[in-house]
Length: 376
Image (cartoon, rainbow, N blue to C red; front, side, top):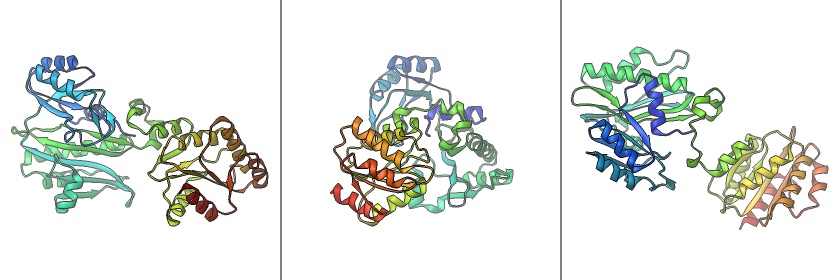
């Protein structure tokens, strides 16, 4: 789950990381009032859950309240990568001498938190990694002990020459790791962490992504969720207790079990097709889940066929078949549907399916081939 910059800054502030004063507003007049209160230059920043705001014109420095109002008026309602800007953060401008990149991410390969740092902050880290990989310092952290003080000091020495500045950076890196750990984050990033001409170190940007699987114990963060930046199908799937990820293909996949879903998508690719989604209805035998799953798949206009691949264990094939019959009665299903049922009550399931117009397949391979064929 992604949260907005202003929300991440609040978590940083609670964690002891220094950030500039700022307030979120939804109107140009609101931006004027904040700039007038601060009585100094401010930055007006679009609050959307995508990167590239600056390049899109969504970040502007205003020297006075009138400018802040004018910039807010231009940014509010702006489209940035398909998302409409509905609020802006008006924050104090900071004089910058140096820009630094610091982040903690969950490294899936090592299964440990990874601290990444670079003195080349203020730009996309992917660009730095591609052009100057030696400019990025990586430190794997043992989660049993956390980030140790000497490790934070070592990173700070890599990032800046001034000893007083190094001490501040080390403290911020330590606090950033603690925020990452305490919020069950998959990413906690500061880009840039700036050093002012007077030697102060301030986080002028903030980004936190939280592991969805941990939200049950992060209720305060879960309440920050902004679904306007999420795929509508994923929002609907979450409400229906389904696991769904939208992809770019044309073969919709409805499967029970994450492993089988992955294998199904792999097989679609193997036979020359493109899966449109990952959708796992789980182990429930609730027919309504099948109805919900089909409605979510049909949201995607790129889908040209649907492959339903069920291995009946806890999930009973006859319940899935009843869900399909219900879906056909409730919905105007014009796309071809291919069904493969095997396992618990598969014979009853096939008998129930005879009531509706679907293609059936005896094996997973046959089902995938047929779904690709009818999609074309």
